[in-house]
Each structure stands twice: as structure tokens, then as C-alpha cells.
Image (cartoon, rainbow, N blue to C red; front, side):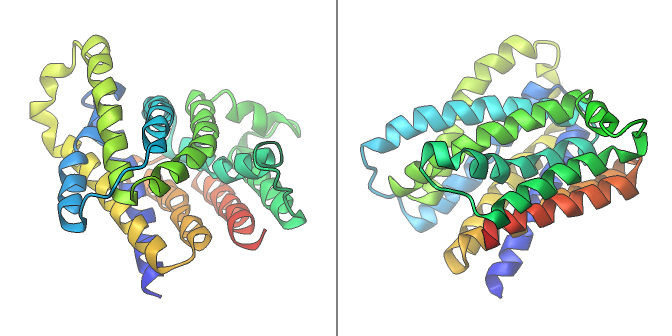
Length: 287
């Protein structure tokens, strides 16, 4: 059961990263937060590489890096924008759609036919999104309409869509090198492209970076801790189980959103998050 502890730590670190990101957005803009997420994780990731060693890299690694790095660059910026524009308890649960997108598109990409249990999982995720905004119900479809008026929820749905395809590229990158090396080099790639974007978009906030390092460095540290915990859990347990436990970060984030940021509608959003997590478990474990 050691793998379970590391999987749970993965979920906790992921959720805490959301909290520090949301807090940081009160001081700086989303581009600096996105930069901090990727750049400040590098010292910790390369320290891990020094301990674990550098792998031999296969040729397909570089193509995977360009594709996967670019997809994750876009997803990183959209992710931070999502938590900026909407409550954490509304935006973050949309990540539950990542495995749903994978199972829906798998017949067209890798010729895998989803099982009935898999479709049941997708259905529960959709039900969970409905429950998130059920308090605003004026008619049967209004909760969906209310949710999609939330800019952050829509942006996070795009992130889930990108990560669904990105997960396939990630697998190629890991197989072509090693888990930690892939993550570290991908973060180098993303950082290199985020820096010029940040310099252009964040002219008014750049000078605030040194005075807010106490908020920004932990974002990168938590990302590195999340990834190292995830890799450790995967090395000990079944991947689908680990990734299902990781989705507990949705539940943690909803709770943190209520207790730290005083976000409203906790009962509905907590229930919706739980239903969505059950849907994810059905997809990743039992389908």
C-alpha cells in the first residue's frame, strides 16, 4: 500500500499547487504564474536526475518533445487563466474530462472500443458537471448553461482536451528516455518559450517577481514533488489506479477553495466533484 500513499501525495501536491497559483494571481499575472510553475521546478527535477542518472535518448524523443512541449505550453497558460477567471471549485473539476476525452476518442485514434463501464464513467462525469451548478437551476439545461458562462470552466475543459492527446505523446517521450528526464526536458522546453511570452505580456508585473518569490518558488517545488510522487507511485502500483487516486486532487481543491478562498456552493460542488471522481475511477480502473 506504499504506492497508495505516494499517489495520495500526488493529489495533495497537485491541489496545493492550485492554491499557491490562485494566491499568486493576486500579486502577479497568469504568465508569471505559468513561468513559475515550469521554471522553478527545474532545479528540483535536475537534482533528481543527478541521483537517478541520465538515460540514453532515442530518436523519436525529439519529435515527441516538440509536439508534447508545445501542447503543454498552451495547456499551462490556459490552466492558469482558468483558475484566474473562475473559482477553483468550478474550474479544476473540469480536468475529470481528460480520461473521458481519451475513452471517447480512443476508437478513432488507437482502435480501442470503450466498454459499457467506460461509458458509464463518462456519463457520471457529465452528471457531476451538472451538479456543480445545480443550485442555479431554472430549467433542466440551465446548470450547463451557467457552467459554460464560466470562462475558467471553459478554458479548463480545453486543458483537459489538450492533456487527453498530450498523454499519448507523454508515453512516447517516457519510453524514449525516462519519466524524470522527459518531464525535466519538457519543462525546459516550455520555460524557454514562456519567457519571451512573459516578457511581452507581463511588462507591468515583471518587477514584482523578486518580491513574490515566497509564493512563486513553491509552485515549482510542488510541481516537482507532485511529479516525483507520481513516478514513485507508478513504479510500485498499477498506473490506472495511481491516476485515479491522483484525481482526488479535484476533491482536495474544492475543499481548499471553500476553506481558504471562501468559495460558495460547497455542498453542490463537493457532491459534483465526488460524482466526477467516481466516473474517473470507473473509466481508469474498471473499464
